[in-house]
Image (tube, rainbow, N blue to C red; front, side):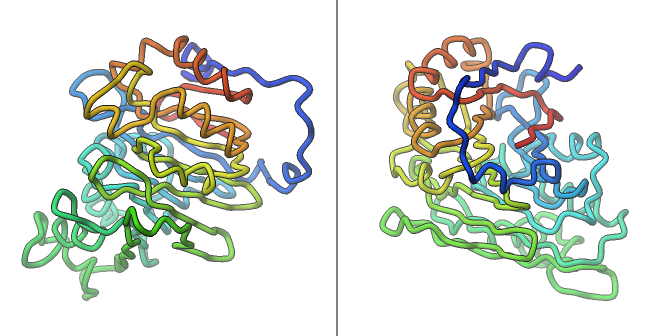
Length: 309
């Protein structure tokens, strides 16, 4: 029995909800989200830090964030890294990105040959851009792990190449951007407010289903509900309780905002992640606050749990 079934799940379905013609467009049997990391940066507990895996047709295809411990969870899922075509970074805090070189080193022992696409925000004095992050990790001259630099500059020793795309982050330009598109996936992003730190929210469309990720954000820019409109699954980060103030409230959403956001977006289910000590034991309180504005299913999953549209 998973954590979803054994205690962390609080799920209520609004009876009599009006049918939505768009729902039938989601081929729910083809898509699932697996929670690789549902915790935060604290040195306690048994949750890995933020990371999510999008499966399509029983293949792991998109990785969202690579927080500490997520690579170990990835192994436990039975996923193949050679199937992952895209890594999306919401931002480059340690608890969202530290396992990236672990995945790249591990890929040496796989049969991967296809290009790995990495997408993330532009940087500032506090955090690097996506390109800077990858170079600082793997670059031949400035990289922490220069012995992995062949994945940036193709050589006889590398079987694939990493290609990075930087998405401009600015409080002055809040437009929704298409950042990746293939026959299987359409990915859009929008800048979100995470204090002074460059951060993005994402919307991933596949097989008619929509999965959106807020990443870490306070909600002050107001664009995430637009990006997440009609989401079959909305993954929202619940790092602070309703009474939080100061720096914590400048960086993260309170439950009341999460509920309002999910309702405005018309999300069909709300999944709460990035759970920390200050929110782990307050789920009943959080649920009551969210339920004042949002009537759909709400869950607090564990690592490895699978969420389906």
